[in-house]
Image 1 (cartoon, one colour):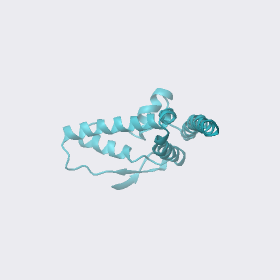
Image 2 (spheres, helix red, strand yellow):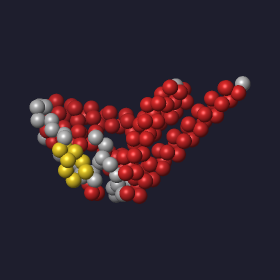
Image 3 (cartoon, rainbow, N blue to C red):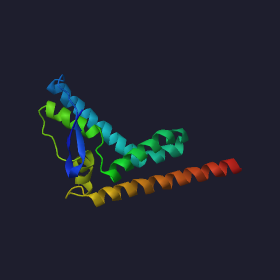
Length: 146
């Protein structure tokens, strides 16, 4: 990986994908987007899954911690430069900013991603998950106390 300045003063990595054919790069870029969306959905909604499968909490809490770190620190998720590199190799137009700014925020905030919005996203993710884990902990303590 090669570091280069990213958006908003952050550093983004460029991942070399020189040996990948354009059609394969296009397919891989699409797969990375699907993986990225799945990760975001897991972070936001995974606590509901944890209510049914408590052992999933280990993976979910790590994912939540990573997502909050990325949003609050202004870091770039490694999937973003990978997707950008693959898009470039495929001959597709790369986008500026990060995954959330390109795919998620246009649905929520058409004007783009701001630092305040990133902090709000982190708080929303935290509140959703603290609420779900509070329910889980109460269920467990009720079960243990019975």
